[in-house]
Image 1 (cartoon, rainbow, N blue to C red):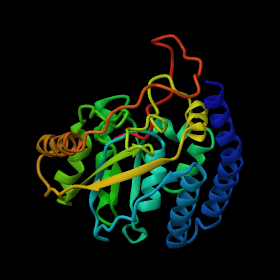
Image 2: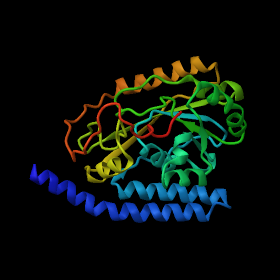
Image 3: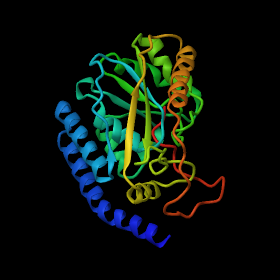
Image 4: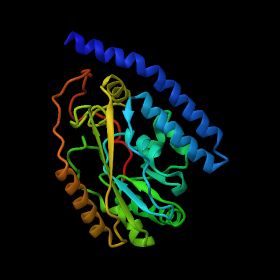
Length: 277
């Protein structure tokens, strides 16, 4: 147990300074290049890659996706999903992330998200979400949009029920839907819980847990593209695709180890569940 704590503490001490330096550099460069969207996207991609390296998160090869507009959807595990996908998505697609409105009010991350032109949607009621669709659909005609249809986070082994509202964008615009399936594994190929942002986690707890954990490897499965269809049919098809790849490549959960963080009592106010769909 003592050796485990020493190893975790050593990893944290080595990584955190680089994480802070990389994050500050990313914020500065993305803000400074706001007038030049193409350059800003490149800076975001490079900075996201560097931030993953600072956390010892190993990325696969960059994704190859069409430059034409698509509705990109992915399963949701953590705030890290956005960093990983920013590093892997081709800049030519100009993909915009869709986040729930609470993210805009987060310290540091909120300002960063607004500076990148991230799209926000108020999910406090179905009416408010539906009212935002025309504006989002207009943007989807010129560049790709990525959202997380689960609307919450999981540990990566299970799939939460998908919310069909976002798929209305494909039905309205006729753009295809590109599903992606993310998974984080440790060096032994087991599912890593370190990146998961669940329940009552705070952002600080999540960052410290990731900084203390052994190196994490990311896999991203690019699933077959789906043609535009009614939103409920698309949600069902994407859910089936996610479930199929999860069952085809089962990854055992490791035993619960690592830095124990104090937990709040059930029902207490936790953070918003990451970037939402």
